[in-house]
Amino acid sequence: MLLTTLRRAIRLKHYSRRTEQAYVGWVRRYVRFHGMRNPAELSAEDVAAFLSHLAVVGKVSAATQNQALAALLFLYQEVLGRRLDAVVPAVRAKQPVRLPVVLTVAEVAAVLSRIGGPSRLVAGLLYGSGLRLLECVQLRVKDVDFERREIRVRRGKGGRDRITILPDVLADPLRRHLQVVRLMHDRDRKHGGGRVELPGALARKLPGASASWPWQWVFPALRTYRDPASGEQRRHHYHPTAVQRAFGNAVRASGIAKRATCHSLRHSFATHLLEAGYDIRTVQELLGHHSVETTMIYTHVLNRNRRAVVSPAEQLARPQPPRGR
Image 1 (cartoon, rainbow, N blue to C red):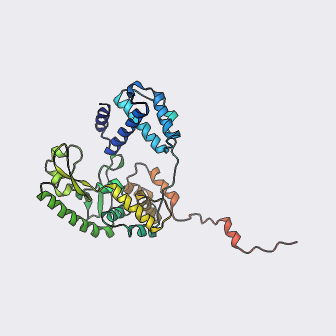
Image 2: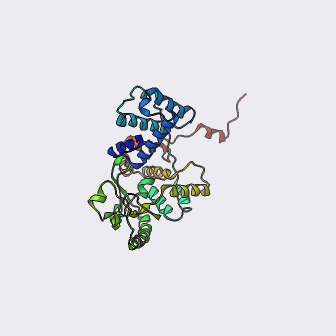
Image 3: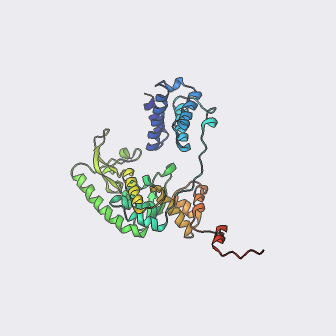
């Protein structure tokens, strides 16, 4: 009952599905930590004890601890009608500022050449368009404009829409990929399927949209599923873990000694644009950052030495004049 009420409150706020899953998971862990007691019976000190346990015993990162805190704050404020203002300053972890992992152009090429199937095209768009992984796999056919060489990102991080570039080098491969996807979609429709999940209340407003071509996923999953609510035979989008697995294998096969992930391709996109001389406001818009301060982190990893600083260690390689007596 509590989790059902929590889910309803999260959906009322129009939070993303991933946020809902994370918050529900943290509330479950919180309840289990306190012996399955009702959170309404617990105090702010009990919340602090749980978060301290995560940091001291669980050794979770600051970001993970703060996510757990956000979930419990939502539970108490939005579901139970209680505020935890007194406990927040004591348990909110300070997150360290880390520089993003950036690959060189040669390293990106080496990794992409070792990825096959749809994952290669997804990875190419992460680097070529600066997309987040989930933004890429959730693209719809209507979001790709080949004539204008644009990709429209719907409901990105923070619920914001934006437009980014579609590289010329990926246009033809993406067209060929969509031709295969169209054949798959037509085959699904012949067998009574061919439907996808629609955002919000569009399924009621546009009853036939879920089976129309413009609303199909650019990267559909290989298998279909039956929606338990509607009974429709649907196809989900490509799962992010498939891309992450393929990318990790490619990085290891390339021998790159960096802790690179799929998100490193987005970091590389931003850094290489700044190195090419594009202004930071343009990069901010393409990335969809709310503040330019977020984009400024990439100025610290540019592949150039602006001040032409010469390390004093270089003098060690020079012949030293003989010292006088």
